[in-house]
Image (tube, rainbow over all chains, first blue to last red; front, side, top):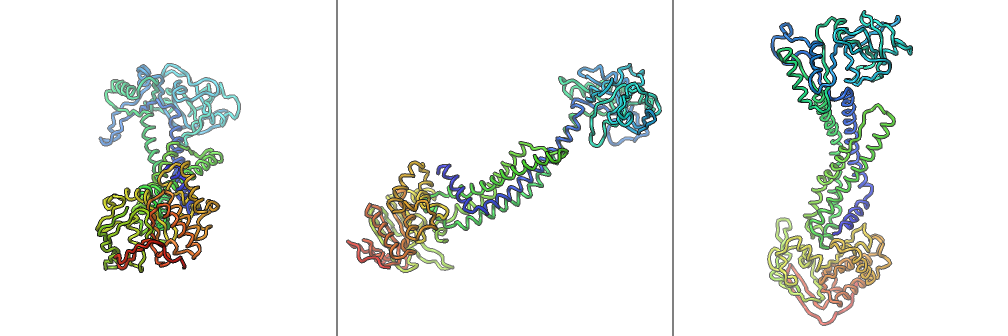
Length: 398
Length: 233
C-alpha cells in the first residue's frame, strides 16, 4: 500500500469518530503536558541552583582545615594545624594559580555615624574581587598590603551601605566593625542572594584584621582560583602536595567547585527524573485509554476487518492499519500536550518571572518519542487481535 | 480453472462435529455460470468461503488455476484473493465512512496501485454500473440496490477471474435484485466465472449449471443449455 493512501485511511477512520478520537488523544495530551511541565520545573530549579552556585566562577578550589574522616579520638586530641596566612601566601606561588583568597567569617556590629547594624563580617584580601567576581560600585577594593600589615580599610556590601549611609557618600568615612576602626574605601555592586544568604548585607575587611578581631589563629577557608589552561585534578594535586609539605600531614580538605557542582547536578537530575516519573503516571492512564479505545474499535469493525482480508489485505497490512491508528492518536495527543505545556510555561514566565521554569529541548523531544512509544505499546495488542482474526468469522460478525 | 478433490471441512457445534463439506469433488471451467442451492446448513456458504480462500479445508485438495491452495501461506492466500477472486456479500460489507468511489477503489489502494492508474479504472466501473452520479455518496446515502452495485464494483475492480456471490439479492426488493442479477450475468457474459449461492430458486434457475447441496454433499449437478424461468421474488 502506498504511504499517502495509508495515512489517508488512518485519518479517515480516526475522523469518523471525532469525539472519541479527541478524548483519547486528550488523555495522552494531559500526560505529556504534565511530564513536560514537571520536567521544565525540574530543569528550571536545576538551572537556578547551578547558576547560583557557579556565580563565583567554576574554577575554584576551597581548602578547609581538618580532614573529614570519621573515627579517631575526637576533637580534644585533634592535632590539625590551622591554615595560616603563610599557607595562603605559599599557594600563590603554585603554577596556574591566579588568585588566592584567605577567608575568615564571623558576625558583629557595624557602627557608622550613630547607626549600628548587626551583620556578617568577611575577612579576605584584595583578590576577592576578581576571584569571586565581586565588582565594585564605588571606590577601591580591599588593600593589597603585605600580609599582617594591612591598613584598616573596609569595603561595604551594597545593602549595608544603604542602611548605614542612606544615600550619602560613604567613601572616606570612618566606621567601627566589632569595636575596631576602619575607613570605608569602597562599596560592592549589588550581588543578590545566594540560597537565602544575603551577599549584599556584609562588610569586607582585610583578613589579618579579621583574625585579630575574632581572635583566631587560623583561617576558616582558603579559596584558590586557577587558570583555564590547567586541569582541576592537576591543581588539586599540587595544592595537596604543597600543603602536606608545609603541615607534615594531610590535615585539610580540598573541594573543587567542579565536584560540588557535579554532585549537586546529579541530585537535581534525579529530582527532575522523579517529577517526570510522577507525570508519567497520568501518561499511563492515557495509554490505558488508547488500549480501551483500540480494542473497542477492533470489535466494532470486525466485519470491516473480514472485508479487508477478503479484498486481499495481508495480516501485516491489517496489523499496521490498527497500530498506526493507535500511534496517530497518541502522537496527536503528544503534540497537543507539548503545545499546551509550552504556552503554559511561556505565560507563567511572563506572569511569575521568579518561578524557575526551563523548557528543555531534550525533554520536549523525549516526550514526543514517548508518545509514539506509548501508541505502539498500547496499540500492539488490539492490532494483533485484528490481524489474526479469521476472515470468515469476521465477515459473519455483522 | 478450479478442481476440488475429496474436500472435507467440519465444524464443532457444541461438542458435536458437523460435516459442512463431506468429500466434495467439483471441477469448474473458466466462464461458467453456476448456482449453488440447498437448505440452511447444507454447506453451500462453507463451499463459497472455501473457493474464495477465506477458509481452509481439513483434508482434500483445492487447485486454483493449477496451484494447490492448501499449501499456501496466509499471505499468499491473501494475494490470491486480491488478484483472482471477487466477493459479493448479502449485506454488502461497504466501509461506512468511505464514499461509493472510495469503496470501489479500496482493493486498488490495498494493492498499492498509484492514484493516476486508479482514477480511470474506478471511473469506468462507476459508469458501467450507472453510479457516476453517486460516486461521492456515503453508503448510508445510497439505496440497497445501489449499495450492492458498489459492492460489485469493488469486487470486479481488480479484474478477477472468479466472482463469488453469497445471496447477492437477499436484502433487495425484486426490482433492484433483478438489476443486480443482470449486472452479474453481464459480467459473466464478458468472461468472468460466476458462482452464486442462493436460497432463491428463481435466481438459482437462471444459472446454466445448478448444483444442489444437502448435508455437505453435492446431490445434484445439472447442466442446462439456457436459463430457465425469470426472477420473481
